[in-house]
Image (cartoon, rainbow, N blue to C red; front, side):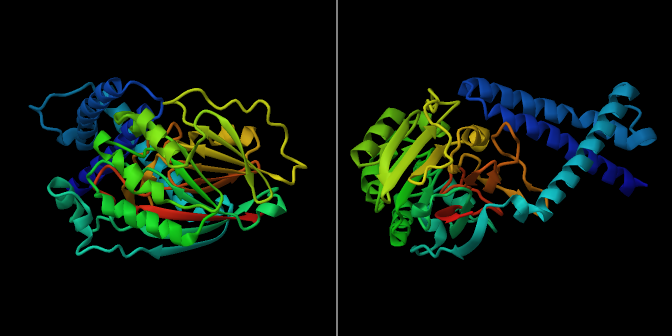
Length: 388
């Protein structure tokens, strides 16, 4: 009986956690003032802790200690049953997504290769102190990146862009917690691919002290055609205007909040960068007509958050690239990610999504601010476009 009561409490606690995690995920998706979000986070933590009380009373039933504070039975029963229902819904939902994860379409082939970085120990790539200490925890993959090469099936892709290669880097979070040598090696590995395009999709520099890393590391990124970028929410922690200026000085094309047309493979690239809600304006794409019948135009959207997937579909982009969600940072078997700063929760945590003629690639990030990653290693992505 005691075991059954304990199990009831644990399952209800999972549902309770799912509820509060869903709220926390969305507080980080709207571009609100950072201090306001911090206050909301504190409130969520306190309320989530308080919410375990009615669950404990519900699970204990008649065995609830008589001297312990007691809520009305209706309150305890309501939240107990609601939490159990949420746990069941979350399990069914995540199990369905896990077993149907390859049915989202858009991928012709995927090759994943562990990257062996040059270092005495992997943790040598982390700053001394807490980052290195946490990096040494069992199973931590924060400096164990993998090389992922994807062939994307793109509907209505003009033949001239068949085989076009795009290196996608995102969420570099240059903060000093991971040392510059890590980024130098990521650049070298990217250049070895000889991509046609390089795309950076935000959260590039976290600390002003790392702005020089743009000149020393990112400036060395090579593309046979163009290098493009947008910034993200964490770029506001440093001088983001200086980040933009330095990248532009290095020859990168800033597509944030604008539409840019560039020559590409004998045709033209129409690139737009949507940095909302943290940076406005949203690109004015009102002049873009239907893409059908255009055999010399590739439409590419650079997003920081994948929440704008519907926007890219509405305006006929062939391909969208995004980051922001870090793959959840920590992923559990079957359940997958829990914490994802998105209005859609964990729907677009990572991977490839194809809908209404647009294919979106969401990278779990090339690096990280937090020195912890479990079940979710950083990725270096090469995307090859194929006619779908």
